[in-house]
Image 1 (cartoon, rainbow, N blue to C red):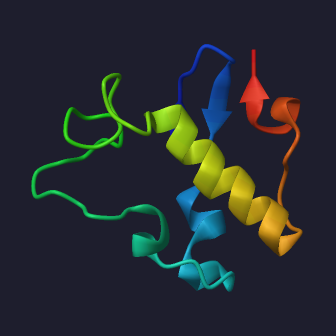
Image 2 (tube, one colour; image 1 turned 90 degrees about the horizontal axis):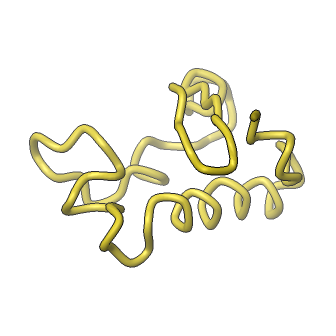
Length: 83
């Protein structure tokens, strides 16, 4: 999955992070309150431009926060964001 942001593209591999990979990360650890028919975190009803938190803020909290807490995965900007 490739996310686009002002700070560069971010490649995210679900398979690497899935419970099947042995990390114990369940889908609903990241995908909370999933709305029927919603396929994007940046949709109007989730983390869109007028939402709080916005998609980037939510991803920094979840992704970077998890990496810091677990001591695994990148936390430096250039390790995720590619210009």
